[in-house]
Image 1 (cartoon, rainbow, N blue to C red):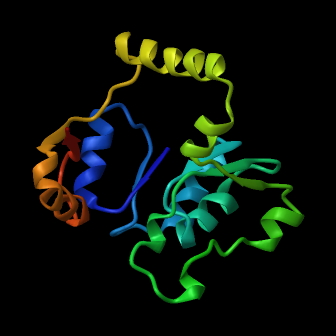
Image 2 (image 1 turned 180 degrees about the horizontal axis):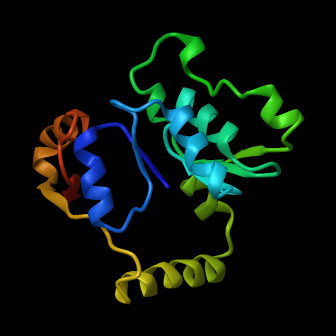
Length: 166
């Protein structure tokens, strides 16, 4: 199940193998998630948006489900403190036994023994080599044009992620 902002991304995700894709630009997220999960309960979810989207995903999980939050795109350029969090639905936590936890890759690297990190990264690389997982194409940008890379990353619907080349 995939949640995306722009309608144009829906077809791209489906072409990559996504079976359920919800576009928040023109779909009601809680209603659509409810329809999807009514037939197939979801026990785990990952979220890079946080905010209202994170709360909706948490509420859609099956009882006892877990949401892992690894980003907060909804807080981008926010200055209102009320917009910097996830409005956690108390009923989902109390009555549904759902939980939420954070994941920060830099902290993982700092706290994970090197041999474990190498093994885990090796598994990811093996998935890419077997084409079980693909890495989206990006745009290589020389470090001398770092400002262009930032502008590109900030632009909506910019396509591939910019990669700085040193």
